[in-house]
Length: 358
Image (cartoon, rainbow, N blue to C red):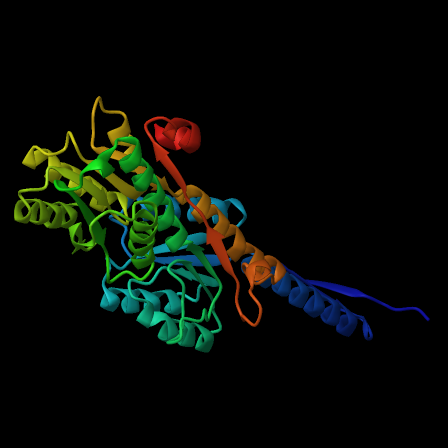
């Protein structure tokens, strides 16, 4: 069978006429357009967006963590990691949560300022079909059971490391010969659930190693996690106890330890004191000084934390691998990655921290 084709140029178009050839060409073109359209949509979906709601970006720990998250995720092809700072405010946290959900992020990583916000966080993310995981402070129910994957510092164990260091310091310096003028200031952050076990662990281990230390000389003072408030509560405690000449101080973060160090210096009682924190990011600068009573800290690596979290989030998107499942305990629905710390002081901080010590 022969077909005749008439080519009619109309402006910039060529119309083909001839039997059912037109229909076939149109079908092919339509199919091609649909394929190209689906490819473009697929390509758009290959660049996911993450978000991190941080409880307090004024703390160096979270600056390092959030930076590492962004670099790691975008390095693996993520479009962006949106960063929200709630400044320890539950209200600002809820606003950030609403904004992140409205952005339609693929994975939301949170560090809530109050773990009472856990269930509403998971509920809203579930309703929006958004994957949610926790960093630093886990998302838990009223029974303390994790309701989302989490990367958490083993806070009590960190506290025990601090207490062990302090106990050894006391015995090595023979302070246990006479405690009449020695006091132990245990700084606490009672409103931050992840910090409470740090202080508890420190006291428990210290009293285990130094059982003769008078219980009435263990003074607890609460602050909000900032250096300024740490200074205020430490200064007030020092002033209220003028007979104490040698202070032992532990704090659940470097900010509190730094504040206590400045208070001891102002009171002229730093030369016989020891201050221990958690972090490393402020302690390292004290270690470089000719003298500082800020003598040690439990080092936690914010870059490693952020890198682990971002990789887990990207694996969840790309492979469907639920974060930290390999750490699930019997009967648990979600796994908790046990992040650890290393005690450092002026003798080993460069070796342990590497480039972060600069």
